[in-house]
Amino acid sequence: MEPAAVARLLEGFHPDGDGEAAKSRELVLALLESSEAPFSRRQFNPGHVTCSGLVFSPARDRILLVLHRRLQRWLPGGHVEPDDEAIADAGRREVIEETGAMLSADPAPRLVGVDVHAIPRRRDEAFHLHHDLTFRFQATSEAFAACEEVREVTWCAAAEFDRYQLPGNLRRTYARALSDGPR
Image 1 (cartoon, helix red, strand yellow):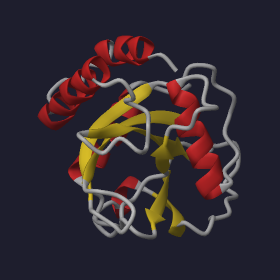
Image 2 (cartoon, one colour):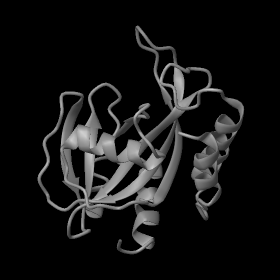
Image 3 (spheres, one colour):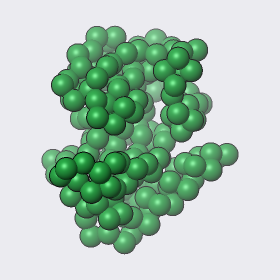
């Protein structure tokens, strides 16, 4: 995977009015420019690029939430792997691995969010940052099957965002994904 290709994708991402996403975008661009291994999960200073998926239900009236067992964060996502040909492929793979969701074919899923967030220290990893890119996907079925690394998987309507205590960055990503229209 070429950092320059990911940088071009980020340069086309304009999070109008979302200062946190704009700041995160600049941090990811700086990482891509200055790091020799921006996609390596073993790079802890300052961190590495990860990918998430914002998955719409078949009727586009809900999104698929995944509660990560260790981090207690909602949204399917994780590390970029060497076999991922394009950056969006990492987001798609993570969604499928964590949820078993069936996704529609989309050769170029839209980048709808960028969020740099802290990952706490654990026995084999130093404190570091995930420079996370979120891509929009469409489920073809409501079926899912959680893997062991996730605590919970559920479909969630916008009216339930408070119930699930979704953070502001995810709510703004959802709004951007909706404003892009159907795919």
